[in-house]
Image (cartoon, rainbow, N blue to C red; front, side, top):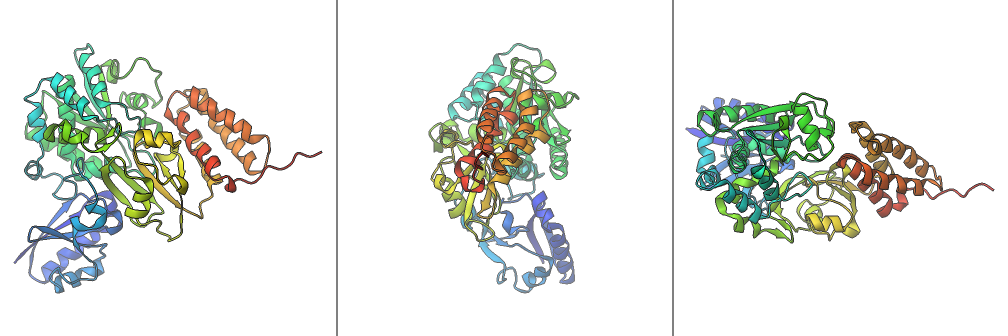
Length: 504
């Protein structure tokens, strides 16, 4: 008798014991004389259920999780039906059923390096269509879709591609920014580990659109599993003729500096230089990697492209809110009951996501704040939980959506300490190129310490300092650090001691 099971192989599942569960499954199957085919997939993104084992029954994937090795014998005894950790059909779990998956449509279903399975699930359909179009038609399709950069800036992707298409130069490049450094974010890693051909297809479409012959994926060394999966998928894509002399991709691994997530620092790092920010102009679209016109897009931006080309721009833009069109992979972490990746159309409110979908905090205490957009993002209090998750909507509420990472805090969080941490983070990670960031962050730590000590003169100094950093920094590291600092002061004044009265 043979048995086919599916178990994730991504970094989160491995950290939670997936390999130990896999060994227990193999041991139990051998003891029972069963021929076990264990397929190692990407994750579905429901991290609190990992390791999540799946078995297909009557066309449905039935789930069991979170599993431990000790749970395995009972799975076989109950014929994978009656078990304390049975979850029913995976795609009917409310967290999953409420999603609209476009970029992550295939993630967690098949083995990430199975190119035939990728094609069988609709993969390469977008590239096939792109090969029948002119570069101008591809750029027009992306422009019509309304796709904007998912790295945080939200710049229209079609305009960036058009700029590179029209730029002069014998050679052009496509660079995928997968240097995922924001706290609480993991979408880039999850897609590479679960569906790497989606990224390759998106980059190949971009290359055809702008006339590039080389592509690069910049990742951080903290992602060894993703690096190994990407390297293997690139070899398979070359053997299949998807990559080759016409367009090829290689990966570049950085040491994990936060500022290398900024596109010009990233380009410096790729060129073997110190990862410091370059002044603009020139824009990378005119003079990027090795001086060539270069598209630098976030990984999720490029992974969204195959769905746009395969289903059409109008289908993609039918999702979303206002100028925030399509879907966004929201990554929920921190003190949260059900954390993971939730891909949905722009427009869901913060409260609906955090309390309705994710079930509030893991501690069971009230949610105090949600930081959106990484360590440089603003803290949203409960009074702003009706804010829709969209570029303009978050901006109007005094924050930013960034790379769509949300970190949840309960009512024990001390926001004065969090404000200080923001300045400390900036001071540690600053590349040192510009004074407002390099010096401002250090002075910011000192000034917040004075506020926490009750110095009545310090708040005005901090306001002036934040304005200087916002207006004078060369990149978003210094320019956005005021978001968490000022939002903590504005929304949680009770966490800052009252100013002492000046001595007579």
